[in-house]
Image 1 (tube, rainbow, N blue to C red):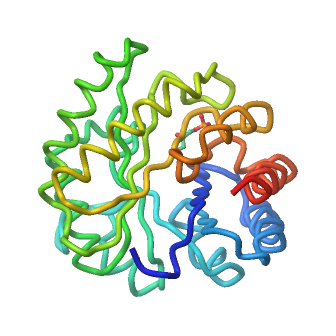
Image 2 (image 1 turned 135 degrees about the horizontal axis):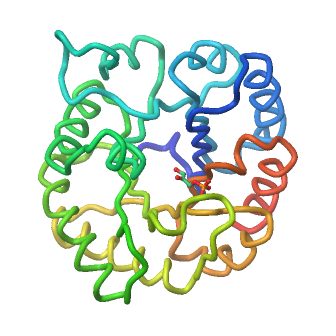
Length: 248
Ligand code: 13P
């Protein structure tokens, strides 16, 4: 893990928001102002069309996805190389919304990880169970995902895992921090035994101003947060970042 990647990691996944470039600019400026303290790595993942604008105002930008292919006849897709050429150093892969709506498989996601590594882009690799379950049941599902994804990791390369229980995504779903922490601990341990490397693991799923304190109680295990809906509400994301900064 290179030195410019500092814990805590806060990834703002804007998904298909905001609606206009003007709003994108406003949120970026707010985030840029507060992250001047450089207490961690705050990364904005805007829609592809806004990447260049956001990048002009803020250095830490992620793609929301990349193609599993290097180049070719893949209408609508963007390659890892294209992101690299826009000076984008991170990319989210395997997000549950892509798994669901684009029917992405772990095998395809493994290819995306390889593409990202090939361009020295840090993949933020999402895993998580779809239905609310017991910890052993959920872990069983996640371990299966990891078994397909881990072989594509490059030794000594940068990568971040994001645990997102799919049933907890939506901005205001109930989150059990202890449950999330238990799963994150298992992911860390498993990745470490399989790769002999230490990977940061962050949490995503309805992170908001109300529940961030209870999640931060487990900051020794949780290395950061993947924030969706709250990350396009300037006031709320500022408060979340402040709380996180104040705690690590
Ligand atoms: P919400 O924060 O809206 O639940 O989204 C989480 C997420 O999917 C981030 O990638």
